[in-house]
Amino acid sequence: MNILPKNKYAGDIVIRFLFVFIITIVTFTSVLAQDINKYHGGIGRGAGVGVSAQAMSFPYVQVAVKVFLEGPYSTDNDNMSIALKTAGFIPVTSPYSEDPRTVNSVPEDVTDWVLVQLRSAKTDAAIASRSAFLNKSGSIVADDGTTAFIQLDAATGSYYIVIRHRNHLAIMSDETVVLASGSSTLYDFSTGTDKVEGADMVLLNSGVYGLYAGNANCSGGVNATDYLKMKTQVGNNGYYDGDVNLSGTVNATDYLVVKPSIGKNSNI
Ligand SMILES: [Ca+2]
Ligand SMILES: [Ca+2]
Image (cartoon, rainbow, N blue to C red; front, side):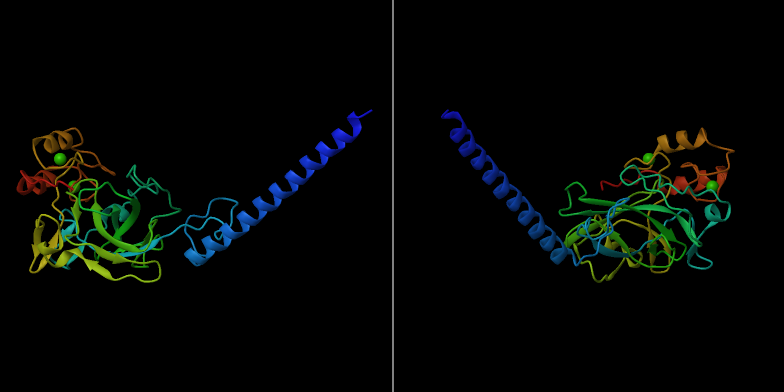
């Protein structure tokens, strides 16, 4: 007989609690969404399938870099070979496990995929990694092949820029570079060894520097193990790490490219 009023009272408490809880969740979600849009300007590259870009916005920065690879570089035209692109050997999926993304097609005038990374301190691990295309004139470009900057998932700030290639020695900027989401200033690695940590790149042409070729096994140095890797691929046509001049074929010419780089190391 006293049970009904007690239960009714308890029921009211539960209903009131649920009402307050739901209002709190709705309010919190709304404020959070406003903050995200305010911080990221409502623009992001992190949109997933079936989710609006605005709802999935992440901080990003624009990076504009010029860099040359020794293997495919030619002094004749101050450009790099696009033999792999011409032959249709460049895969639509990036070879770098840090960002193995896939594009619909490889754009024109591309030399190869490279991996761009950002570090907060020289010896820290990368805080962002992005696979991107390197075109024949040394620009790292977006997937359209012409936009001369790319986006990486990081908040506006100062970072060291790391460039990796699957059969060249990695480099890192000697200083931090200020990066933001709405603009980009070109960091030109090709103009001098003072641009890189350790001050070591190979002289390709008068006043033009690039990454050492010959790192067929994608390690931290060029040595006999790279020859051994190439040896297993000699005679093959296609996308091979032993093809250090990116000609589309692994042969004696690649041995000659490796030879001057023997003993070079990159601790990046
Ligand atoms: Ca190596
Ligand atoms: Ca070759």
